[in-house]
Length: 99
Image (cartoon, rainbow, N blue to C red; front, side, top):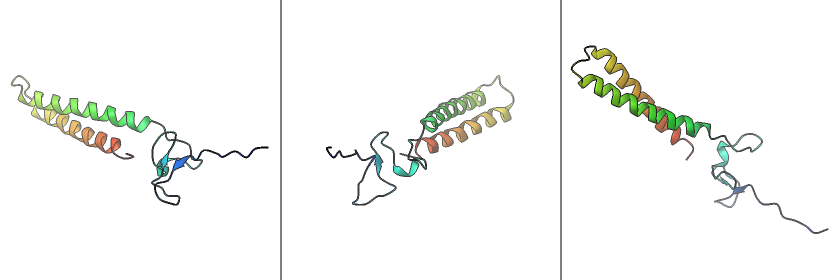
């Protein structure tokens, strides 16, 4: 029998185990992995990107509605703009969370 070495799952950046170690499969930190060290899904990144795109479109639509003279109700335009800004901030925070 020949001894075999197992490939380590996490690359250490200091001499001992740390939550900042990077996974060799997905490249994300050890701290975002599950209890059984399973790699996290990509859903938060897709959700963050969708919120970012939707928020940008909503903010621009709110500005366009506000500047359009034919659109008389300014409260709806302000609400659309505010919802867009909130989605932009949420999308940015979701995308920058685990990087």
